[in-house]
Length: 251
Ligand code: GDP
Ligand code: MN
Ligand code: MN
Image (cartoon, rainbow, N blue to C red):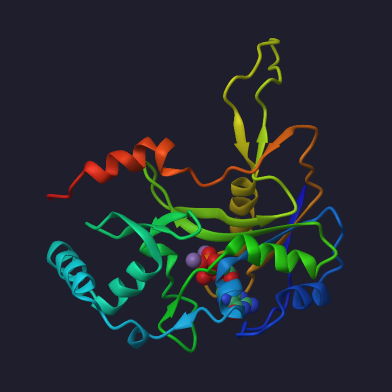
């Protein structure tokens, strides 16, 4: 398996045809996985906004004021408004905003970025990243596309790449029913391969000014396994998320 970044991509602008830009720069094979940072998908889809596009509601002012009180830093109520508008649920409102997006992803600040955003203050996540992945895939000779974002996680320091949209492959390899080396049947292992691919791609893409938002994974096969397309947990089966609903920050 080999990973490499697509070279020489320019600053992406609204309306750009990402698939064509990628196809122009690499000779893709049909079994490549093309991993695209959500940042450039959002730019191409016109998801750049100014803070003034989000006049704050009383609720946003309240959320921002509480955060400011806790962190001792100024918090822009317009930013809080953008986060609220992008979210279906505020899972935690202090000491930071952890929210669920419409497409099921749970992340800090609804995944809104304030870095790598020329021409605006805010870059919102793509509205429906799996549809974005399908559109990009339709314009490429490669059969598989993953849209990624960099995201923090509980229990561990640091951020890493995760998949927020995918096309042409299942989200997971389902190992249940297969056997380990002792012949014991696996009962629970469902390997989320799109997150693993996103994480590997993010390692190559980097986080700063590298200019390498698209990474090709070559020579990786899904293999002879059952597939599962479940990725984001439903609230009903997500006990950590349910527990967070009961919890209140009092630090
Ligand atoms: P995110 O992880 O999707 O939020 O994206 P990042 O902001 O971390 O950027 C990932 C990579 O894409 C980094 O190497 C950035 O330098 C690069 N990048 C971001 N925007 C652009 C762009 O418009 N054009 C190019 N060529 N690279 C970009
Ligand atoms: Mn991001
Ligand atoms: Mn990143």
